[in-house]
Image 1 (cartoon, helix red, strand yellow):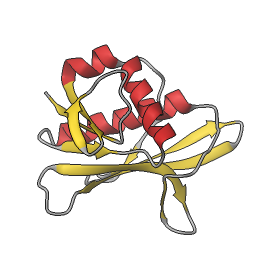
Image 2 (cartoon, rainbow, N blue to C red):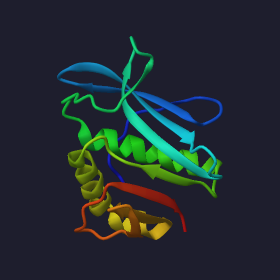
Image 3 (cartoon, helix red, strand yellow):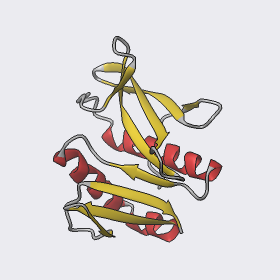
Length: 147
């Protein structure tokens, strides 16, 4: 993926990644958080969105419209790669806050399919059933891990 990406600020445990989106709506703080799923070894939930300073949490429903979607998605992909390098046996679970976001994630996976497929296994969840990723299917969630 030769797409331009933002510089990441990574916490020392490699669980929290921060960056700043820059565009016509100004500078917007973004955050990516990997949290281990309760009671499930090596499974981590990926949370991503705008940093809500007042609530002190990720707002995964915010729509920034800063005209840098591809750069943001490449930055998230870079965080996933960094996280998995630190934990090669980890499995990342991700689900968009809306069906439209899941569609955006699927389209991004398809766009970079050859590179992603060469290193990772991706599964999609449809009606709570996991299946190998198909480019045309609509998914509720995704899991990703190294081959």
